Image (cartoon, rainbow, N blue to C red; front, side, top):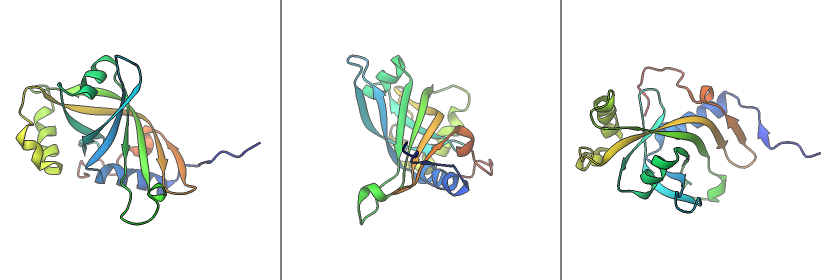
Length: 169
């Protein structure tokens, strides 16, 4: 019987997962196309909220936003390959989540907008447009690939900020 390639989650894995989330400026958002049921992947800009969870600013006109309005199940891949070496040896994390929208005027929108602009200043050009809202990712599970032979399965508690002051990302 083959041994599972998934390692026990330790503090190093938790720290790497936090670093990948905190430093991400964009990611690949996976959704289900409501017309076909096939996977659809889009690049989205990313920042974090005060709890350290990823957020994106999305337009109602985009296909991924329309898909999430029908089915909020999604995944978000974060982590960039380095300048050298095999791209598959660089760490990355897939967050499995349920999308939740935060629209203009809803409680917390102004605070999140200020935080988001600190990380994504060019978003100031369109953040105020009526068709844009924040997409919050309610993460239920994360699959961390820390490089060759370093696979972990993490839960929401593993991703929680150790110092929840909101100073991350």
